[in-house]
Image (cartoon, rainbow, N blue to C red; front, side):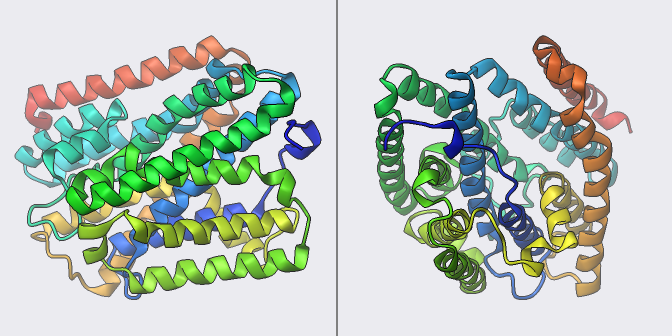
Amino acid sequence: MSELKLQDYEPKWRPDIQALRALAVLLVVFFHAHLPGVHGGFLGVDVFFVISGFVITGVLLHERVRSDGTSILDFYARRIRRILPAATVTIILTVFATYHWLAFVTGDKVAGDAKWVTAFLGNIHFAITGSSYFGATDPPSTLTQFWSLAVEEQFYVVWPLLFLGLTALLPKRFQRTSLLVGLLAILVSSGLWSIIETAHNPVWAFYSPLTRGWELGFGALLAVATPLLHNKAPRLGLLVSFLGFVVIGLATWFYTSATAASSWPGWRAAIPVAATGLVIAGGTLREGKGFGRLTNATWVQWFGAISFSLYLVHYPIIQIAEQRGGFVEVQPLLSNIGLVAIGIVLAAVSYYLVEQPFRKWKLLQEKRWLTYVTGALLIGLTYGAIYWHLANNGGF
């Protein structure tokens, strides 16, 4: 029962996962745009964390059982192709737009933030500076949304190495058990620290990878447990998934910005995290099937596909518009809807012209070293743009 087997971890297209991505990103976007009814849309990030832990661990498991090994270099090469191109374009254009449409003082501040964001340390920077977009008196950085990307990448510095240790150093018959035990340790330790830190230092708790690791670890745990659930009870799976979506919706309605500002993540985050787990587990019980027309609708799947680009680009658009208007959060509803529409259009451009071409570029897939060179060039380009702006006050 504990041995990892290829048939248990064959990669399968999961329309329910794509629908979850769509839900998560739209919750975050609508929340930032102050659209009515999405009081707790910030929890979409927590949904993303669980999805990310599940998907990435599934990839690691498949590679492990297919080749009887785990290539850390291949893992990070995939992350470079997946993350850096769209992130680079977003950071550079956000710094430029901030200088152009806001005061150069604000531009200098955001350029300073960009130094940390580019190094995937934005969450640490925002925690140190006490930056928050929940009830803050000062406008938040137009790059604040990158904090969650930093948390993910910091988790993925540690988790693949731990995964490698738990699978490479033990006999095959103990590998699944060792992974489950290791992930349970992450869940318990990180979850307890999340509760403690949230009570004593809510800003650090919000941004810290130590208080968020259990959310990604929960998704990873579901991936390891896939053979125990796969196609075991389709009817029960439908009910479980439906319940998960309902709980996410209820949490979105009842949680508010005040919840996030003073008591998040803490124990309250366990509700949307567990609900996301129900959706994923229910889909696994149903062999990865969604809810037919509801989750398989073309527009739902499309929003799931562009979710990463949409998450990156929507926030600076909304923030620049708000700050030009005097940082007044209550904007006309049609204006907010228009900003969301602009974000969707730019996200589609980013997805089709930047994100997908780099991910599917065969030369990068075949030449791992070229992926690393490309990643270094993208990071260098970003820092070059940052320091040029700082030296020239944006060039304006």
